[in-house]
Length: 72
Image (cartoon, rainbow, N blue to C red; front, side, top):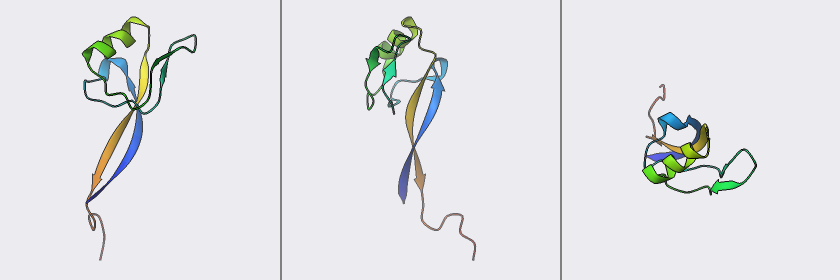
């Protein structure tokens, strides 16, 4: 088994604690609110909401098994 990391844009309403930011989050003026690689918690999500952030890029990981999907 091996994994691949991807990135996905998630609207703020769908954010959940434990998600990891793939890119820094900036406000409308370009000020950095959170760095990449930060694991989100309820407090950070609420802070983003208060600052008017509508979506962020998060990491997700695909778990792949060797041989799955192969045709003989």
